[in-house]
Image (cartoon, rainbow over all chains, first blue to last red; front, side):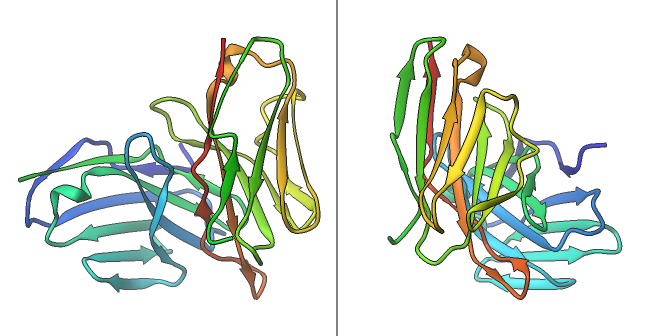
Amino acid sequence: QKEVEQNSGPLSVPEGAIASLNCTYSDRGSQSFFWYRQYSGKSPELIMFIYSNGDKEDGRFTAQLNKASQYVSLLIRDSQPSDSATYLCAVGRGKLIFGQGTELSVKP
Amino acid sequence: GAGVSQSPSNKVTEKGKDVELRCDPISGHTALYWYRQRLGQGLEFLIYFQGNSAPDKSGLPSDRFSAERTGESVSTLTIQRTQQEDSAVYLCASSAWTSGSMREQFFGPGTRLTVL
């Protein structure tokens, strides 16, 4: 089992829809959970972080963490074509372990 | 500085040469991280520093790879006797630590290394 697994893509949603990205992790001691967005040829850009169980909302983005289920997700509401990118889930307590990423495509 | 900076942005070298990559973290960030990303692949952890010390260097792929950090600032990643499989983007990130926990990691623009 990979340490951090993301749902395989690519994920395609129409403009204005909700995009749902999922991630599971194996280390129960993980303390920090991040979602990064990476455009092709660019470095990862932090878009959400969450440290406690529950939901955290920031604009169109909502991160959800369930430590008992070892699950973290990212919802993007009102998806825009500019949201098209690869989304990386990262989990850790010192170093970060990254998932392989989910490619999101938002169609106009 | 305002963000994490890395130099050079691009490096082309011949197989067998040594290369040195530099990372300048965000001012005040005590932790610094190195990752590698091969083309079309995910990010691989290499090493991280807390201050000057490296609590976890488990990701360094071989003894050809080494890293050091002076003070709580600049870090250099050195790859000796480069091989073609070392070709990748090398990413540096930094973060603050509060209450014994890592906070958000912010990435630099990366160094694209090509070994011919």
